[in-house]
Length: 520
Ligand SMILES: [Zn+2]
Ligand SMILES: [Zn+2]
Image (cartoon, rainbow, N blue to C red; front, side, top):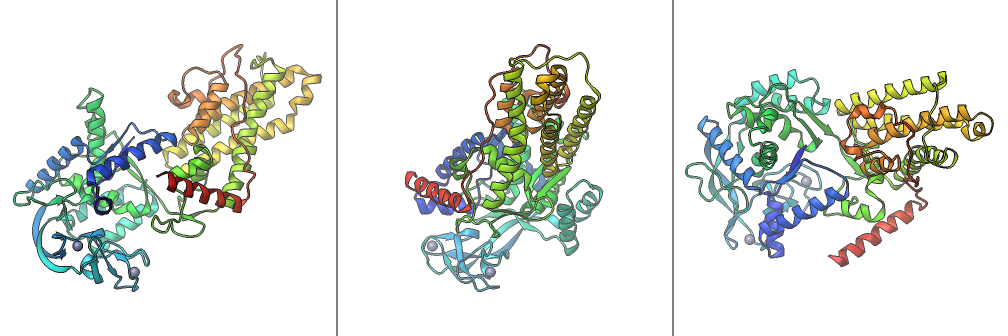
């Protein structure tokens, strides 16, 4: 599992100029922050690298040189906005102006935030340089272009054939091809980025859209180089039995279904093309599109000041927008946390382990044979664990977490129906049977919930007093019997109910935001 910081866009360069630091310094700072957040959120990559990594830069230069030598890159004169005062061309975020479609006054050079349309800088009405606010002139420049239309047929065939691609990714991409692909600029007149390796392109850098997606390959190369096995990356990218999967938002679809495949094909090497691109729709924030500039949303570092990562992770997976946009509201967040995470999942595990702790002297009861009810309920567990695995394989993560929650719900119902707290006084063997089964459910829940709520899953594993980390276990461990005469640790509640209402939570968020703003 690899990814990294995509660092060479104009937003970083513009922000760095504004802050009076170098782009590299700002990128270093952002990457360090991101690594810290990933760790705090329990997100574990095998290699979370960055596009500033020397391995990435080298790979991009070599790969683009191959594509150039294969004849897929040509030059063309074009017109760009230029600021004579700053002595620089003004691509993308370097320029703002009036949107030609909706009239919004502060539309950015690449996109209008108000109407969402993609723009070219030269389309802006009344453009101005974002650094000096001066009026730019139109100036001719030369750029290198990738001949994307040459790959239309091959990409079309690839999309037609790959039925497992998410429906939105597939249909959107097929449509783009039908409308006709256009050549795309590979170079930029900016300083921040990877120097273009083409003859005559001195002073130009590679346009970020070309190199960022190649980072999937370079991150794999870097991983195996760092692990003393520098050829093993090829198993993932060339062995036809290997499959690569991508998890993205829908705004990123064409980069993964058209551009990355075309860049790989253009090398004339037999790269594996993306096998599945799981593209989600958008998560809205209280009915609105999230926006950094308008502070619509909750930021990763703010969220952790309110509640531990697993609360958010559960909500995000349970409402993952797989087929249509979903929505965050405090009300839904409180409901999901309290009803699912606390009352169903947490409560089932806590009651089971507390009962074993107090009634069976912390030892998971041993039994002679399972009664038929217990056998049936274990059979149902087996089926559900298998279902979660299938759903994960199909990238149906929302369905998978729903099935996991269903396991906890069945466990809870089983306890409610059997009432072992009554049976323990009259028929200890029967009570033991029930708690044995419930304990197996708890163990299975630790394993199957581990991808979703990793910190809590490890807590369960620890309380079950099982060796190692839950994250090192194989899937089948979920159904293996707990060891004989096994003692568990002292159970603690995994979650707590949110007792604040919507208004109070919003106030807490605003407080956190104020405190963090002062601290930084
Ligand atoms: Zn607009
Ligand atoms: Zn300027």
